[in-house]
Length: 166
Image (cartoon, rainbow, N blue to C red; front, side, top):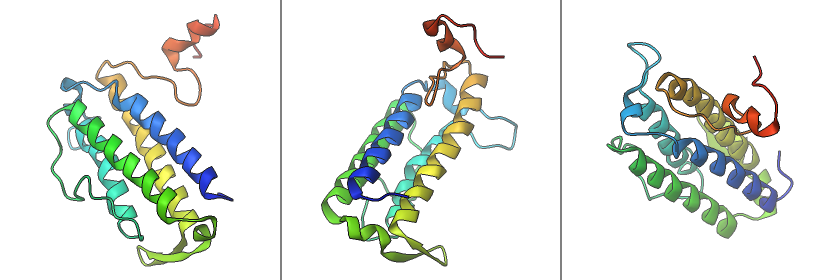
């Protein structure tokens, strides 16, 4: 949990940077990748990350308008990245402008439960992290480079003069 808005903003920015690092490695061809025939495509998964920010935060006193909750999936990886960047920037700017440290303990009804704004931010970040992990599997299957986010990826161990972990 966060003790200040500045702490929350810093962590939200760090997670946004990590998500953008992955999104930047997507290609248009990779967007159709699925784990199994009935599964989500990589495009659907990354678009879910974008629209979930809009859907969840619009249940608060913030209004993310750069992308509609039900907007169709863009055709290109770059369009998805740009939409994510706009939504993420709007979220950070609005929290900085509208919320104070005391706001973190305010309680809102979210999905039939009472959540503090602190909890909302934590759930939002964990949701994004969860789907980023799913993305990495699809990205590997599509033959894309997967950058390390919380430590080196397989291809990055050589930068530390170490063999990749098994």
